[in-house]
Image (cartoon, rainbow, N blue to C red; front, top):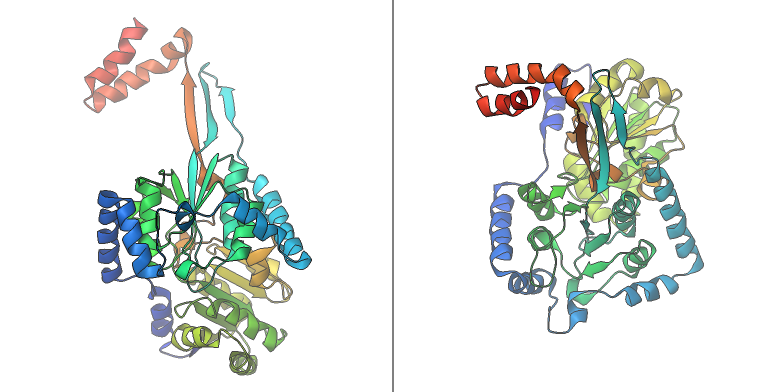
Amino acid sequence: MQRLDATAEDFEAKFARIVNDRRESDENVARDVTEILAEVRRDGDNTLRNLTMRFDKHALTDDPSSWSISKDQCAAAYDALDGEAKSALGMAADRIRAYHEGQLPEDRDFTDDANVRLGAKWHPVDAAGLYVPGGRAAYPSSLLMNAIPAKVAGVERLVVCTPTPKGEVNDLVLAAAHLCEIDEIWRIGGAHAVGALAYGTESIQAVDVITGPGNAWVAEAKRQLYGVVGIDMVAGPSEILVISDGKSDPDWIAADLMSQAEHDPTSQSILITDDAAFATLVADGVELLLAQLATRETARASWDDYGAIIVVEDLARDAPALTNRLAAEHVELAVDDPEAMFAQIRHAGSVFLGRHTPEAVGDYVAGPNHVLPTGRRARFASGLSVLDFMKRTSFISLDEQSLAAIGPAATTLAEIEGLPAHAASVKVRLK
């Protein structure tokens, strides 16, 4: 873990290294993914069989149940849940649905001063592929966060791909699939699953959009396939930035930092504070918590390699500028006046206001989506939303009068651009 002092001469150089450290896939991953996608496109199901056995030790045989998971199995998994788990999943689903229903866009249809009718209509995509991780951990919350916005958008066919190592399935994921009314669940993961969703195979029909988090190979596959299909984003390792004064409970902040460190050895947790003594207490709290966590091996690697504590002179003055440079996935504002600081933050995937708003609540039950831009992409990207599963079609309608009003300008511009047929298609109507 790095400890930086904002007043030190070498601070800018050290902070710039943190900002510019991508922590993402290398050239070898990109090369491997290119080869995998080419194999999927060429050999379809046969490639899926070979790679699923190679990576997951799961055989895709002539038995349909080896390839997919039925709706009945998902319903049984949901019915078998205890009351507390069922209630928690239900609350999460209800809150996520309510939040995303507010994102539905409205069609436009109006006539302007030139009597030109203009507007746009929104339509859902026909089919969406949802990737649900199943390797290091299986996340029912991830399925909810991807499937519910698609359902709210009106997508008719929802297809899940999730790896089932050695044939093992996660019953909570299946229960979430039942709750979201998933149409198909395929026992396939990795870059080859993304390729199958994009290109289609003998067994899996292609989709229009692919969303959902995954490892470096999954992220790279989505990047390479953008344009063949739509994607939500290219997601990298998880991040959290906590801004806290010395009034917070250091154990709370330590737990918040570890909530992301335990995701992956390449996750990043950063604290910015103006209280050096508090920084030490948080660091001590992290060490104490690491000794207790079942995920301590992963969290320890993340904290040791990528964790940072930054001590500044004036939190209100200094923290927002550093935050905007980091453009982190998650930003917690554990300060007396979080609204004032929030007003100065332009680049963040999601912001958590106040000492009683841990990021982990946003991962599950708050409502906003937890699929968020990482790797400083919050400078130009947003979290997953209903709009990722929809597209807008504009329309124009003119009559003789309105064409006469704006058509001559169109012919002038067409002629300036050296496109006489464009100009002629307007002129012939003006006559």
